[in-house]
Length: 244
Image 1: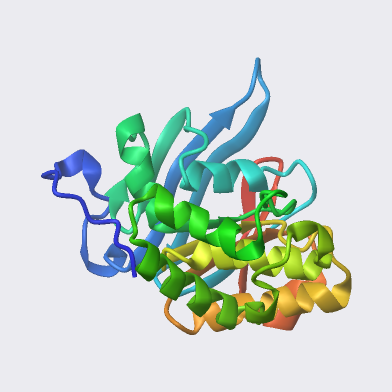
Image 2: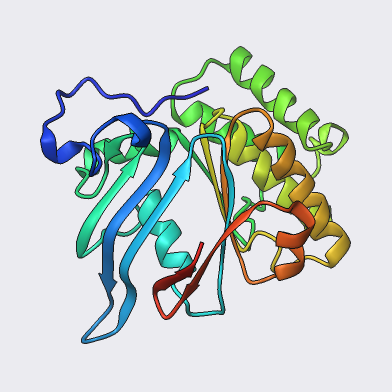
């Protein structure tokens, strides 16, 4: 499994509020986080969230509540205007651009619209990111076959995305997110384009991944999925945490 560790010596500002002790096992710690788009348009307002290592947590709320912005801050697609964000104890609030690739190798991200490359097979879509980080062809094949088996797509490896069902495309996207064996998996409305049966299948995959000690954070507005999985949820409205 990948690590978020860094060789840089950490100062006081790099440590989560409260230091070690009970906070030492937080995978995610957001403290007083604000994000604004334009004049007076606050996407997040003073958000405080903690997610323990190995936890499965839903981020729920209506459209426009700030769920996507919150997740984007976690993998460095956005930066906050105020507050601090820690991933596995590392302060990523003002991470240098050159450090983003290292951060993202430890985070798998799954999107609602799959983002598969249409001109590449399922196998090639997953192997592509392995080659980009210098993994040998032999090791890349081993890893890809392992994650395809995990999501029950080994028999679809040579097919192109256009011939897959929506659920199969999402499972391929999940396999791509998992191939680097990240300690943190983030999914933004991953079942938004799927029917209820396929959506539950995706949740089953996430639950299986979570049982292997991967921290899973899923943004959704579908309360039935939260009830199906039965884990903790954090409710966001108007950019504020109102429950959880």
